[in-house]
Length: 164
Image 1: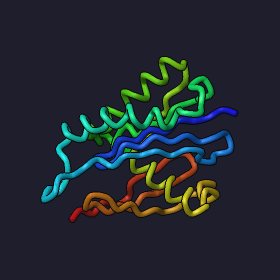
Image 2: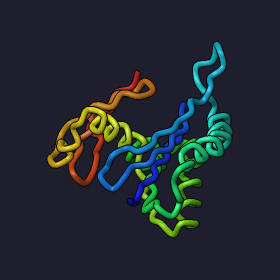
Image 3: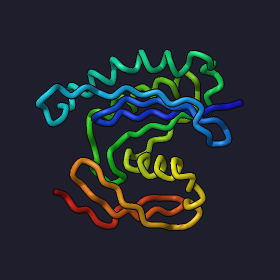
Image 4: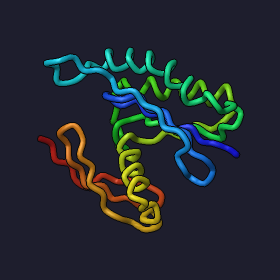
């Protein structure tokens, strides 16, 4: 059996997951990034440091029963949203790890937006993956931003953004 590795380094959680060829999540490991009492969030430099620290622990847990050679491809959240200029340093940590895995294993690396991951996770968790066969409208709420996103079988496009 072949597996697909997913990597996400948001500003609040380090996440690694393995899916099998049938699209079933086999293993999902994550560590939240600690926010100090009284603080409203993390500085990007702190998030980057914590992701680097978490990867060592998470990869050991994820790969405990699996040969790395069974990984066929790597997917990684490389930016917050699928628009030009969308950038947060914390995603560079995951993208760097994905690049290392890809080069070492001679496997392709697919870069996606964190927002797309949220939409896919919602569909997967709701057992609604067949919705991807036709266009639909999704709403993404994150970090004080609400967006209407047109999802098609090949793409996502932000239609409207509202910020608080």
